[in-house]
Image (cartoon, rainbow, N blue to C red; front, side, top):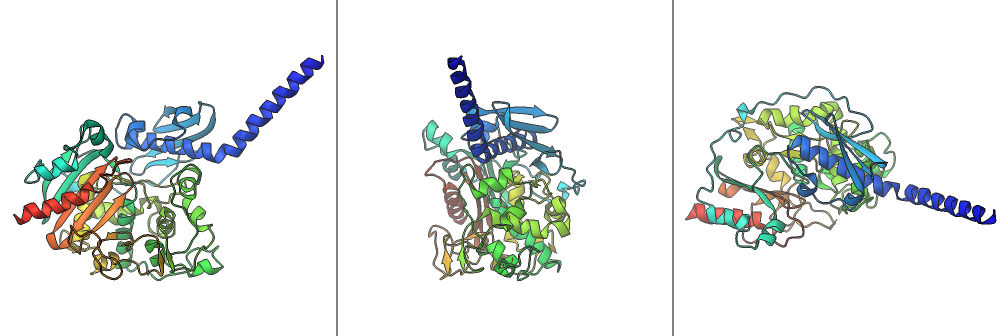
Length: 441
């Protein structure tokens, strides 16, 4: 009898320990399952690819996670039982993590007719075979090429497609995740509202709950990442950025709840939260989840572009744009032309020149960051990458996504990759430099 009681007590203690451990680790597990569900949904349903585990950065909990595919949805859970998270696909809006299927308004139709790159004949390598060989790592071993992970390179010169190449399994019609290049697109979305007289960059008192010093934060500071809100841009399970992306139904409210770490305007700290918070402020009055489509995708004819929203309909403007490299080339050409598209001005004159000036914060963790774009000159005017012209600027995203724009050369280079742990990350800059050399030959 006594032995039986001991066994019962031990079993109860073990169960309590397991339950307690699970409860303590819930945020970590839910972050992992949220990432897995969203990645699988976006990769398989949005991009029509077969294996999300190969296409995107690995989930540390992947060996414990089970993926279940439903009707335009994917659910991830621990061993098929615990920490369940579901990502729901909505046409025009992509995948959203939510407890129930989101009910978004019908998306604005987007027609490719206004986009000269969508159906343009492919030039192949054109005059840039050697440059594209280098971009795809043909000088490397097979293992190193896989680590480099280049999936697409496109070169636009003087408004014309002059070179493009894709990795096996990818085509001109394959949408790819842009990660933080989305922040540069957000700059253009803001510019559209400014041009239409709907937004002032120095507008403050942006959230009703900000009754303290946060009330002084402006639209400009959110775009330039100088809001001063406490943040950690560390991509590990249960950090602020991953909690925002994979645990929070209202991402903007979560970021807005952060305390001030610095006075607004004083300190530049790179923050995906800052850009997502920005869109949570400007999107509701301009179409909600449809805001990017009606504001920019439709005018530019970006038929593949999908900027995924959170559960309350906020476009996740810090990282969740899926688009083909050709649509990114159109975005680059639009920026290169200072917001003029098919002869019509859509951004304030001089918008891009102002956007690519390095932010003059008193304290900064990022040299050469402007208003959503990276620039080739620091605050003092020093050229940062000597192999490229001083007026070069670029959009940059996780794992080797980069779009390089050189106004003086009328050049746009787009490179999409999955470049984890590779020292060859900057080969897109070399493509731009090589293209300039070839075009001058």
